[in-house]
Image (tube, rainbow, N blue to C red; front, side, top):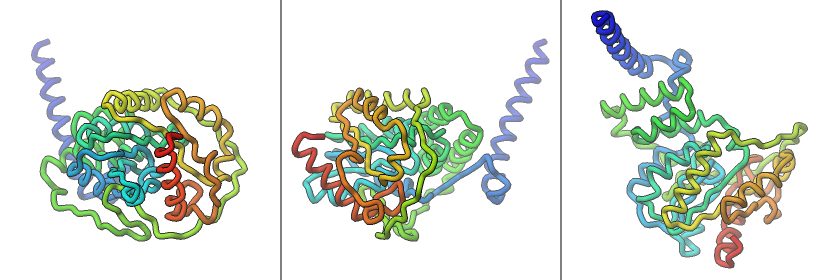
Length: 309
C-alpha cells in the first residue's frame, strides 16, 4: 500500500510538472485559435496594464473611482483636478464586483483616498466575471489574491491564464512591455481615465426587456468592497452613471436596483438626474462621449459640493 501511494504521489508531481510546462509552451507558441482555454491579454483594449502600473506609483489621493468601463471611460481625472480634487481611476472593462474586490484589497490602502466613488451598472452584476478576470491576471502581478479571484470565477480558462501569467512573471517575459498611450480612437490619460475621440451614437432599438438579477457570489464580493471601503475610513458614494434612455428603459426593474443600492450607502442614479441626448452625449448606448463625460462629471462635483451625493 505504501509503495502504491508513493507511485501515486510521484505520478501526480510528474503530471503537474508536465502540465505546467505545456501551459507555458502552448500558451507562448500556439496561435489563439488553438488555445481557447488560455487567453492572455497583455495590454488589452482597456489600458489596465498602464493603469495599474501607475497605481503602484500613486498615493494619498482625494478620490478613487471603482467600477466597470462606465468608470474608466466616465470619470475624467482632469475635470476633477480643475475642481481641486486629486483622483485615481481604478475602473476597467467589464469589471464585476469580484475584480473590484481584488483591486480594493490590492490598492486601496496605498492610494489612501478620502472618498471612494463606486459606479454600479446593474448589467455588470449579472456577468460571469471571466472577461475582467482574464484582463486582471494578464495585466497585473499575480499572487494569492489573483488565485482567490480565479477560484470565485471557477472556470478553466481563468485558471489556465492565471497559471500562464504566473509563469511569465517568474521568467520576466513582460518586464520591458510598455503599452502605447494611443490606440485607435482611445487615449490613456494619467490617473486612469480613457478618453475617446468624440463621435456620436446611433441609438439602437430594444425590443426585448431585461430584468436584473445579482448572483450570490457577485453580491458577496460587492458587500466585501462596501465594507472594506468603510473600514478604511474613506467616505463612500455609490452612483449609477448615465446610459442612453432607450437602453435604460429596456430594463424592467430599475427601481428595485435603486432600492437595493440605497441600502448600502449614499446612492444617486444619474439616469434620473441628467437629461442627456442619446446621440449627442454618447458614443454608444453604454458609454458617454467626452461631451457627456463633462456634463456628468461637473454634476457629480456639484452634488458633492452641495451634499446631494
